[in-house]
Amino acid sequence: MDMLNTILNLLLPPLTIIFLILFYPFYLLIKLGSCLHKNLRFENVAGKVVLITGASSGIGEHVAYEYAKKGAYLALVARRKDRLEMVAETSRQLGSSDVIIIPGDVAKLEDCKEFISETIHHFGKLDHLINNAGVFQTVSFEDFTQIQDANPIMASKAALLRFFETLRVELSPDIKITIVFPGVVSTNMTTPHYIEKYGSDFILSESVSECAKAIFRGIGRGETSIEEPSWMKNVCPEIVDYALKYLYFRYLKPYFKRD
Image 1 (spheres, rainbow, N blue to C red):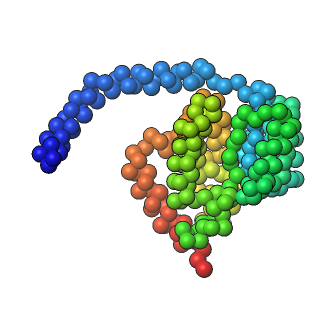
Image 2 (cartoon, rainbow, N blue to C red; image 1 turned 135 degrees about the vertical axis):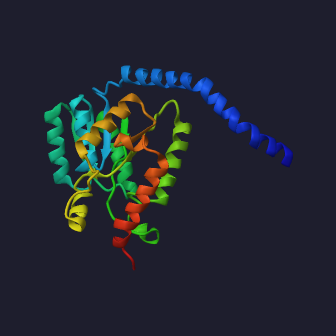
Image 3 (cartoon, one colour; image 1 turned 120 degrees about the vertical axis):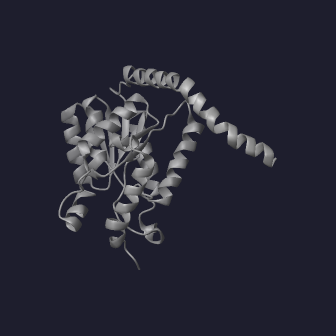
């Protein structure tokens, strides 16, 4: 057994290199063809019913506007009714002919059931569900129970990722799932915190409208995952991991709440 492992350790690295040299160009051609196919078959969302949580501001608000421009019907969910009414009116002006608002809290199971039932009762169907609602709070792992129902962080976000990846397999091909990994986006949830603590917004923050456009395009192309800003996925993962750890320990951890 040890001899076999030794042989494999010696043979597999050069064989892998040979394989990459021979077949990597074909892999790139396949990726190019897949990319062209996705862009040519962009989903027409006109008349589609889209339920968006956290739609009163930030990413959810602007994703609603992107769908509205293409003629989708919208069900907007958030806790702030006054803000929902404003977003709904703007969505109608942008091109959505049927918009309803459903005030409620995604952290409450009964509210979640009501979102779905009311949407289907009004429109007769549901085509897209955008699970966007969340809250912003810097806390350490042992203190995160207050916000985990609405917006799990750190370790629980990794669990969410695996959950939705598993769900994608179970529901395929009838239901498609797109997982979004946004970086730092300039919203009312994040920007005031940076300005309060550092005097200005984060230098790499992306505008919320650009983030929403990228999310909408990715969903329309049927992407399984979206990283925005897109440059994040093109940088060496080790460098990104090191940079994120540095930012965490240098700027975020000192402000974590402790009992």
